[in-house]
Image 1 (tube, rainbow over the protein chains, first blue to last red):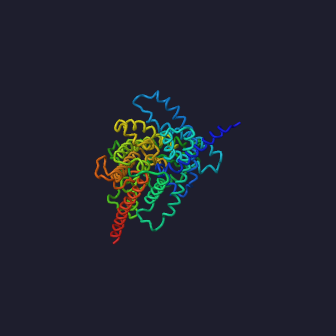
Image 2: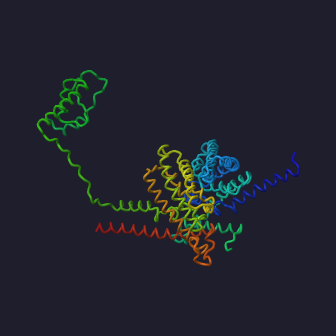
Image 3: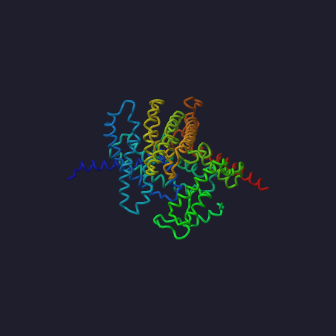
Length: 215
Length: 311
């Protein structure tokens, strides 16, 4: 039977989880704040054949499933491995290899899950590899590792980061539709105006979080 | 001596004898022999009319050919020289469509200016927008790109040739991750602890589209092509990174490679990611404008050349 203290700790944990997830969606948005996955985002917005969901859902699932593996690697595997590494080989050099392997394992699990859905899962499967090896996924993993997040924080940040990417794609997609105006000078059409648009959205997030530009 | 040219079509139209038939043929047989000479053909026809088997016909034809050669050599008759192959015209005039296609290909292959990976194609934006905030960071990113881009492309292409072009994304990404290990060691020896200034953007290069974009293309290139394109892309990426890095340092801190030029920074936001996006947007627009003007000029030039030729 749960008592009041246990209730409070569960509530605290949920609140903690939500605060990290919301932080990843807005304040630490992977696109607007960290500039990761922008090239893929442009391709996604330009290509009408690929639907936003078909690319973003695999990202979300891979990030969510790789989060516990990443935490396990950071806390157990890497310290263990460090004992066997020669002096000339720093463990930092192995970071991409180790954490990409976590993402690849998560990709394999998602691949199996999507296969269960048959034809419905096919468009998601087509995007799975490109979604897994997106800057957004490895970037989120590396941020979690650098910040020494706990398991709960890692999962919350990964979930929030995936939702944040989806939010960024939706915002840029909507913006691009409006930026096809004839008032935009010819040399700015396409990628340049989208970059400026993302820059202005990033400035709006600075207004939300607070940034000191002039020291 | 029968005319060889008049015999060839008949030999082609006749059916070859079936191998299982060992009996002498009822009617005259025709045999197709590669590099047939008139002597061989005549001998084969004679043997076929006598009702010999296929092997016997072949044997007779070969014997006839050997006999003819011996006679020719004994008589000191020179061997007939092969007809000279007509050479293609030296000055082949291109059509307008060919010239335009060649120009389009040249524009596509020019990864330095006209099809720059960063400014024109929007690749490699994460390190350019966020990490390249000053000249030193830009230089470290350039060295990392030099060490990773071409080598990754070549290793991945070599492995793809072995796997039959399957599992491309995994191969490209793991090639980059494996090559990152020696690249990191070299970078650490060159720049030391300054490497930490790049933060997560250095290991992030292994999944950067500027390096592994080729994995999306199902056409398997050769190693030579991978090397050439890799070098072109590397130079294009380095030009863009250095340009943006130095410009952001100048606007954001009023200095270039640490040398103070202005006491007050002209545009402090340039050192922030938001400023990076804005600045890169403006630079990309100017770059696109100049590149498109040049391409239009070249297209106009092709049009003029072909219009004058018509007159």
